[in-house]
Amino acid sequence: MKTYKKMPKIVSKNRKDQILYSHPGIIFIFLLALSVRVDGAIDPVFVWKFNQSSGVVAIESETGHDGIILGSPQWVDRPVDNDVDNKALRFDGIDDYVSVPNHNLINIGGPWSSKTIVVIFKADDTSIDNKQILYEQGGNVRGLNIYIENGRLYAGGWNQNTSESNWSGEWASTPIESDVWYEVALVLRKTTDVVSSNKLELWLNEELKATAAGGKLYSHTGNIGIGNVNQWTEFLDGESNDNKFFQGQIDEIRLYNDVLFAIRVEPTSLTFAETVSLANTSSISTYLPPNLDSDYSPNEVIVKIVDNSLISNPEQSNGANFTSSLSLNQLFEELSVSQVTSVFGTHLGSLGSFYRLQFNLDQTLSDVIEALVEHELIELAQPNYIYRQKLVPNDIKYSSQWGLPQVNATAGWDYETGSSNSIVVAIIDS
Image (cartoon, rainbow, N blue to C red; front, side):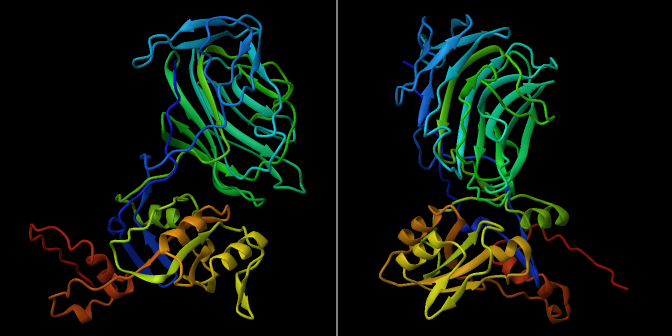
């Protein structure tokens, strides 16, 4: 029998791979979100493997929430790895699709700050201008979908109720080819009622291809459609509520009420413009397990709060830490947080979302960080690392180099001092 692969939830990275050059009001982060690695795993809530050889029921293997097969799709062989008996369901693009009933863990519960939808598929022809639905849930007010049109794969969502997240709808897209097997994932990453950029992600074959703005998804009816629209959906061009049959094969669909992919961060060479742009976005929402081999302050943690998620900045009153989030206040109290201070100042856009927390030493640092990153409003938590000077410049004119202190170059030299090829660079300053 076919088994799903447990996918990564968290990543790890040695802190020494980060190079930070700071300037008053600006922090240049030489990082790039690239890929993923396995350090942990989460289980899907629902899995449709399409692995039977006949029948009109699409068996759901986790909870028994089966779908009904409509039209006359064909069961076909699709051997993978050592599973020679693996099957897929072939849709004719005319009247074949699968209808899945509402479920409180799919659509009529919630609200959800995070979701992941994975579809393994192969389209006969991606170039046709008719939309082809792979998966959709919801209706004209709230929902998610994945579809193909004009050689591109789209993943999108919306929650248009003004009293909720008021997410008008956004779609991320990437080009795909005909007659090629793909694994696509729509990821809704730790959203709030404030629509924020880069919260909806499109992954293809475990690589992040595109992002779009996203908000929290609330309860919605309308059933679930696989291979066609089941009642109603929305599209990027505003078209909706029509048959959009898929022609090709679907091997498996998995649903998670969590973020399936974590973003791995690697050092890279960016232009200053690209670096500043990256530093001032919230696109790096990664849990970095603490590197406890490094020096750090034992009772302090640096956290990044989701951008625009707090109505006002955290403040202290009578020894208690207050934010506009009751659940965050409760967590701070449970962790015996005694002080909350801004790292960069609250006027610096996205950088104003970084805070330093001081907590009771009765708890271990790793336990505190683990509890913090589970909260939906905390994107990142890490130790407050201590940096020490490792190298003293031997340039007798160093004190005249006014530009180097401005970019805090000595902090960078703790990690990299340049090539050993004795390359000399001369700068003529008029």
